[in-house]
Picture (cartoon, rainbow, N blue to C red):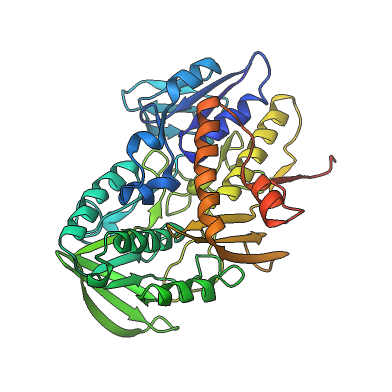
Length: 430
């Protein structure tokens, strides 16, 4: 009998619980440790921030579904992981022991690394449902009192799609409110060029996103380091390709939404052999930690080196299909270990992304995610917005029902015509 514990119940952790449950033997047990019982569909946060969704539209209470599936839920949240002891200390000072641990916590949001950044400072966020709800009030204020807007991400960020999405969704919302003509918009990013996305571009994301920004009168600064934020002013250093200072800018704003850099959560921070200096879990090709082979990790909390050298730190995103492929590989590998076999499933780490603009959008497929690629495709159109809405409804349905089937593989096969996009490949037995 083995006890499998999933740490985290977000986009990756919840479907991880559903998939690994199907690989357990009758005598095995499964527990999910999470802070609270609520699942929130993070990709819809930009819509919450402009009032197109409410909190209840995109949240699910997991307690009933987990109970029906015989998944134990510990809503106290984790204080610290003790990998040498195979146990987790919870926030109520109790402990949970495990035979296998899957870390799926998502990131800690490093707002403190830039003075004045974030909800406790002078900029807004869409990284959490609470942040998005608070941002909605600030967007309402902007509509009442129009002024300059800054949207983007700071140095070290690794999730650029939502920043682009929010810029275009906010543009659409302001046009519908008939105040866009009084709102100058600027996009600030550490990326070396628009559409880099932490992936060195996918297809023509550079051309498509630059064109979309020109179309919507959004100016931009790339290779931009945010040094600090004051009330109504963002201090930005623009650098050259060699990282040398090119220019300093004091950018005024009435409203700003900036994505922070990510780092590992406190529960795993500074554990030698488990995480890198930023607190991200290090793994091998089977999603397994090299020092603690009974610990696996999936999602945004996984350590992935950057695509290439850039003047400012630019992280690699973990897109939806990539996370789903990590989940499937991990479930297969733990299932194998439970049966006395060696792990053989390897996640493909392809990227499939739908970036919504509010009335249209851009989709891209990168196979594999890191160049050079076999598939390097991007496209723009109103169908992307419709697909994003469909994705939201589908994903929330499968969370409520406890389903484990993937979405992105079907999307690629049915809509994009990519015929060989697979979540995992299995190595031959020795």
